Amino acid sequence: MYQPRTYRQWVTSEDLVAFSVMVNETDLLISAKSDLSSQALEIVQKCRAGLEDYIKGHPLFALTLEPMRVEDNAPAVARNMALAAEAVGVGPMAAVAGAIAREVGTWLLQFSDEVIVENGGDIFMRSLRPRLVGVYAGESPLTGKIAFVIQPEDTPLGVCTSSGTVGHSLSFGLADAVTVFSPSAALADAAATAIGNRVQSAEDIPKAIEFAQHIPGLSGVAIVKGDVLGLWGKIQLRSLY
Image 1 (cartoon, rainbow, N blue to C red):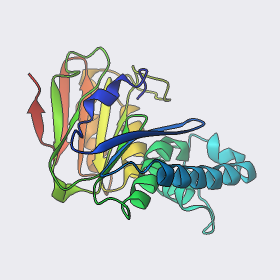
Image 2 (cartoon, one colour; image 1 turned 45 degrees about the vertical axis):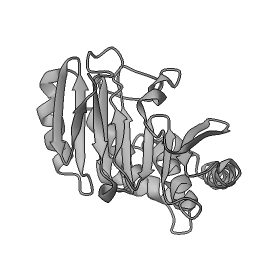
Image 3 (spheres, rainbow, N blue to C red; image 1 turned 90 degrees about the horizontal axis):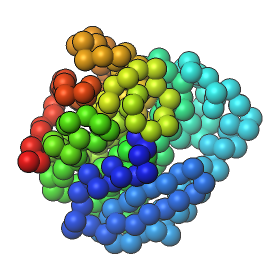
Image 4 (cartoon, rainbow, N blue to C red; image 1 turned 180 degrees about the vertical axis):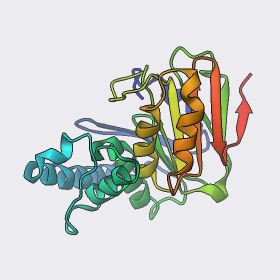
């Protein structure tokens, strides 16, 4: 999601050191035990270079809205995007933010045993203590009122959000927020898009959740449309009142 990055206030990590890394369109807010800016910049540049080189040779990869197979020797980030997209029936770019967050976060775990990488509202998290991730759903009255509780035993975890009413991300639905939880951040990202595409109104939430239940690898889904919240899976909520 994008709303001049105001949602970033909803990710809590007061005990960690927060720093930003930007490379072209990639704009990350990272929290770790220490400032790992140089290490993060290195892996972001490497990740982007590999993906950009692959797209130069396979331009359809960046354009298609349908799943697309990739070669075994494709960069890891492209393979992860393609697998996630195939699982839910969307184009591979629907998984790019989550896939990059996962690549960066996994790399940084060799320097810090706790890492949170936020990439355009999509999160990769490894934590040793419970964390709160607040709900940002644009004009919905639920924005800022509730948060997801992430338990350390459930991490590493991807927490990815898609919206049809907030930001610039492509969505064919009108959900204020679809947040998906999965050990695979790429899958969570792609699934958030696919599920969100199925929500035009609050009445569509049950069928969207039914669709989500048939996606292997998801641990939970939360859908916000107006003042209506639909939940499925292993999700713990906390009021922020």
